[in-house]
Structure formats: structure tokens, C-alpha cells
Image 1 (cartoon, rainbow, N blue to C red):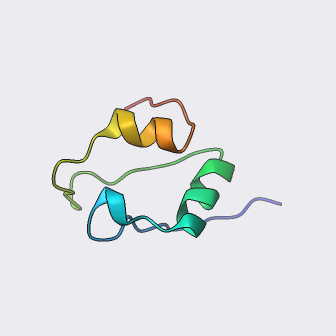
Image 2: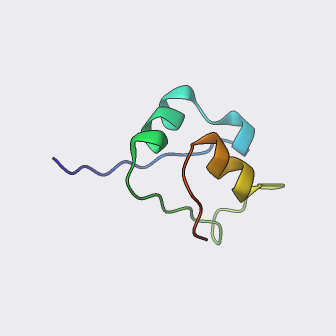
Image 3: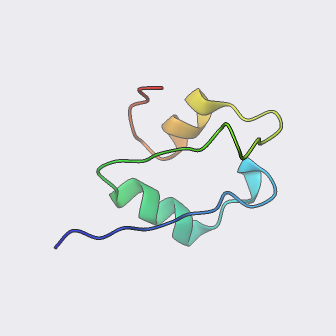
Length: 57
């Protein structure tokens, strides 16, 4: 059954919870709002490797 989850990165990408990582790894599609939610020194490539998803940004 399809479902929708909103996952917050916390104060920085290093503060993401284990539950959030698990949810992202199970997701078919991830949308990252990097326009209205600026995360200082956020490395999208490193993040996509962490969640084991291919980046298409």
C-alpha cells in the first residue's frame, strides 16, 4: 500500500535520526527541499550514498 512520509534532517545533515534513515532507505522517491530549507555544508552526493539511493538532482 502506498504511503507518504515527511522526514526532517534536523539542525544539520549529521543530525538525522536512525528512523529517518530507515524510512529514506525504504522509499521509492525522495524529494529534498533545498530551496526553502537551506542546510549549511550539505553534501547531496554523500547523503545519497548514506541512504543508498541514486541521486538525480
